[in-house]
Image (spheres, rainbow, N blue to C red):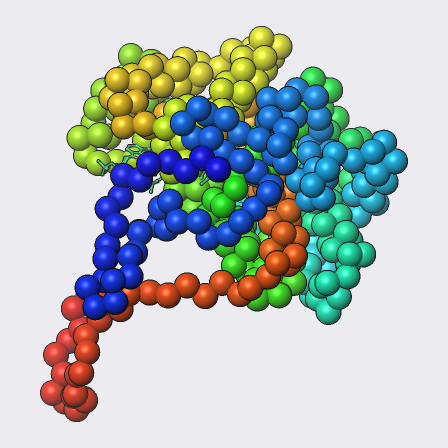
Length: 398
Ligand code: SDX
């Protein structure tokens, strides 16, 4: 497994000698056979298959199957899986009614976290070790998450969600439910390839969160809801949304270098750059950039792409020597924008895809479970005596 060289110092506890590495940088927290990253060479594979091959040949549902069950499906297995997913796309009117009570101004990731968790109210967790239950939970989550994302988009515009269309494949159906138009097949295929690229990435923060939650033997809906909450942050999946805001702020290719210099001088993180595992350009960013160009060739150019390329070129000399290059979130937003996906849905779209990886890790965790319970290095006060209320000083910072 490729583990990047750490730029973070380790901290040794004087009394016990225990070593603490902030952010668990370089610390293995599990064994896994799902995804392998070579961060020095910029290589990524799912279950041993190079991502480039999957993105060219496979579909999102087939890749999800591979991730979750470890092997590429046969024709019959794939047909059955696609059929099951198609049959379970609809969500209960109760979930839709619940979503109608969410504030329209709320972030769609919060709506998704709540609605994903609500599925646990409908499906019992008691059979968690039954393969049939696991299969059904996988199907439900992969099928219903896109429906819930699209439903909230329409609900917040004051409209009723539209029902999934059985004649449309997975990605085309999502774009249809979102935009109320049947998508161009080329655009739907590009979107499906984006989903494959985001489906899994070893022990990233949201997957770690999923595994920790899974290790308590709670239900898979809670596992996915905890992961959605983790993915939402701007240091993780939320960065794809911020990249577009940043590119709009820079607004012109000739402003890119000055923006970068200012960000570096003021210790601001440049969104869509840097990765704990990679010291080179994220291989997913390489493929996504090619998809951006395919999209623009077909549907017209977007000037923000010129800004993005200027920023990447300026970063080469300024951040490259530290191993900081574009990550998966840098180019994805440009594809989604061309597809007509609103900016605050970029991270929910990441979740639609990553649910495959979370579920693969859920299964793997259940297969050899031990509850996560790391230790800590206590740095607080010791041996204090009780202070009567009237003698206390105000707490600083409260
Ligand atoms: C995802 O883990 C995964 O696999 C995640 C993911 C997945 O598929 O699940 O790939 C998806 O989350 C992609 C990352 C999206 N986030 C961003 O684009 C936000 C911007 N990037 C960073 O904040 C940062 O690079 C992280 C969060 C991605 C990684 O953080 P680390 O490994 O903790 O690195 P760090 O913040 O400690 O930085 C180390 C050094 C620092 O410099 P020094 O103090 O050592 O001089 O690198 C610098 C940082 O200042 N640095 C950056 C930078 N990223 C790191 N400087 C400017 N801009 C950046 N983006």
